[in-house]
Length: 371
Image (cartoon, rainbow, N blue to C red):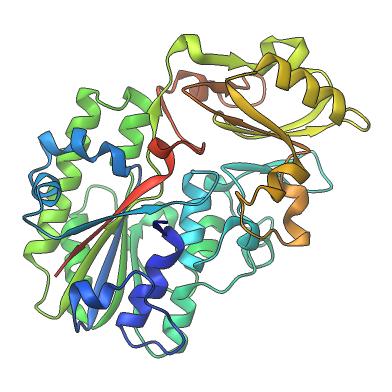
């Protein structure tokens, strides 16, 4: 079995000498004795997308050819979506434990849907996501833990849930992000975290394989080359991702709000187009389950909450987090996507690239190590 996104920071912490951290990824065997570790998460850099990316990314091409760095396949957590993966990276635990169980989730006891990327301080990040992060653990162990992030992320609920304990270094839009990140790595021993969303944005808006996507790949590659060129001799660079993705053609899209057979009996719609959480009206769960199973036969796995939890896809689920999962969980297979045009911003239906499901194209992510 491949390692997981949950293993990245514990392994990095072990390399940096943090007691109690376990190097399950054998980073020490790859990078040796180092005093600084830079971890860069490239949003949307799926493992199975690397061959397509390589034509515009000379560093990634050299990684694929085996001439630079070391490439390993890891798995992200489920749903294969950014908020869930970032918190799994930061805490080192599965979504069922940390509670950030999707792109959007229903706040239990209400009809409110929390969109994690637009989350402020309600609910409180510490109560909504109670697990200590590895940034906190590094800090408590006396090891510097810094995060160089776009300034718009600083102070958000998601940033606090995923990275609390880090020393934040905001990077203004239009500034030299690669230079800022490289300078932090050089400034002091410890762990430095960086993040870039350009590739994922291009995949969503223009599609995987589009000119926009290839241009974003070139920018990501330039960022990584700059970091590698300026990496101190006692430093290691780890590159990973939060998910992969796939394009969804028009004929593979189902709009639940355009089909009464799918919208009947539903109180709250959450999740995202590849994984839907359906919170049902009282007494309606069995009917919703049957209707969705018939309509999406061969295109999705339709389960009760209890069945989905028992399958293990979320890892162990805390009792307090169970109600964040829908009464019915619909996980798309193939290239199907389930739109909810009356529940979500219109831009969602205009996207081309999607992720969230359990296909290898979505869940396989790389770990690339450079010394």
